[in-house]
Length: 141
Image (cartoon, rainbow, N blue to C red):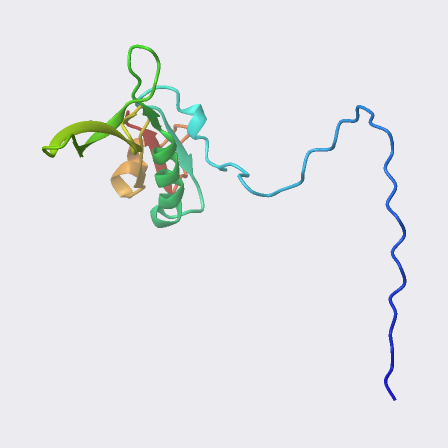
């Protein structure tokens, strides 16, 4: 004896008329941003202190901020420039330089460096807002 199973038919979908309705923004934790104040360092030579972290713990945030501190080099028309690569062209195998769009030319516009506070540095920052910091992050470019 075989058992036959039948699935109940799904109800037919119904669609409303089109109206203008603003959807809520999706909730995500991606790209939360840094707890460090890199944007507050608007000039070369400015610094902020970090308490309760070691240089090793801050280093990945420094690296990320330095990666974001690069800008594309643009030509006179405002288009990004790219490194070139040699490509054979023509029947005789002549080489022609063409842009390699996977390698844009960039320049560093902001760069940060961090140092761990030692005894000498502790004396230098005494009485400043940096006092009590374990690591000092400064803008060098």
